[in-house]
Image (cartoon, rainbow, N blue to C red; front, side, top):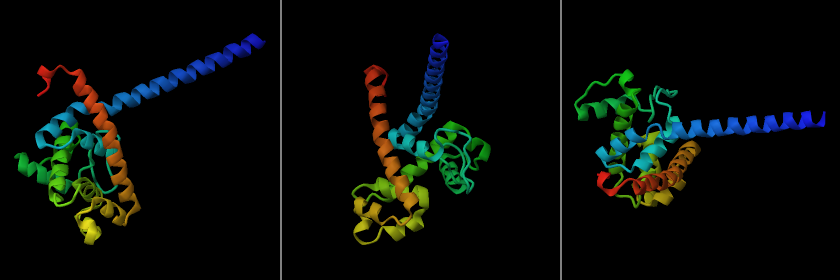
Length: 197
């Protein structure tokens, strides 16, 4: 009887460990499923791929079919206005919602838009918090928060963000960007120099 209980307990532990390993592998696979699109879009528009990946992580957790409450779509949770603005500059206007669910298209449009926002705040010591707040809460709110010292001092700006959810968003994306920078750096080190362009 005792050996039967040990066998059942051992089976339960092994099953739990197997499930956990399968879950971790599935999460890892999902998290790396968009790396090719991310690297391509980041290279095309001159945006740090780690930042793009961090935004995707926060916006959709790498689910290409994600849909937001306000109509945002895809990996980078693009609004129709941002997507159409990109489509016009890329010469593919208008872009349909169906195309925005395509990971490569969504990542191109979102990265272009993110790059545009980063350029908008170049007067600041670090434009990223401003760009991320704009991406999350809109330009009108950023202009309200970027007052006085906060207009060019990114730490003061983060402190002045009046929406706790936007402040949390900015801090989470910046922290995750550090993680992905290390990850992309290790991938680059493993690729032979001749194949890195």
